Length: 273
Image (cartoon, rainbow, N blue to C red; front, side, top):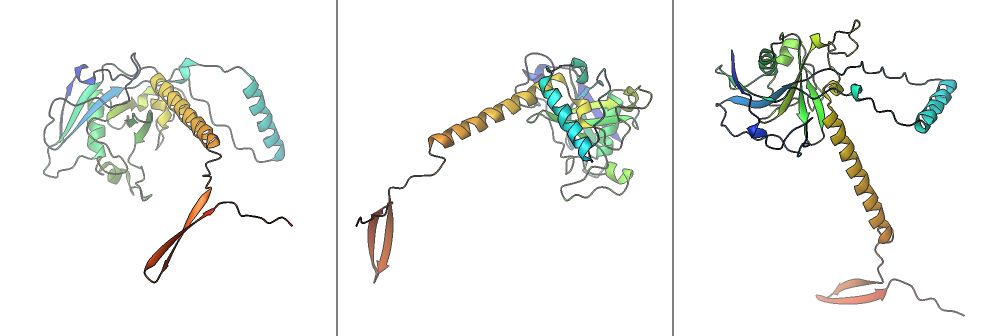
């Protein structure tokens, strides 16, 4: 029930590239060719899992001894030199990315999450039950995993898997639009004995789609925010803490249709005896 076509050209991308130099320019790739009516025009790319299993989250300390041990470990980690392991971030996705146009052929003029997942699975020869997709937020350089159990803005989620797959992909909570970049993983990519990557979970971690380019971009965003905050504090200090010094104030009185303006200084006069 789904028709789609792909175009393996990078001409439409221009300078947009995540994972290869030059770095991304902060905008989604443009769509030059007009897509068919009642369709969803996307870019899709096949991702790979990191070479190492992500570390398990440390349990929250409960007792005083555990809190003290956690504080001591934090101090030691702060003193230790930073260790950058390139294998903790997934490698560059498949290149070039592919254009995927999902067209609704039913009389009902909607495209559902299930149809998008089926088209992505067919594009990369993945079983439909194994496909995991995520939408890239290029302004934040983060990924949002699209699952049938996602909650909408009101906090509600679908009662069943089938109902979740039948929801419109353009609407909340998915909010997929033309030109979006969709990352694709397969549950079969996790070859570890205990499936440590968690691709089979109901909601896989969005960090599984992270690339080195995403990490660099987020670090750059954090640095820009820190610089902006520092400039704000400096400007606030130069302006006397942000308070305006008023040497005088005006008081207006309206009496009998006539207005009078009195100007008084901000400091009160004190008489010395």
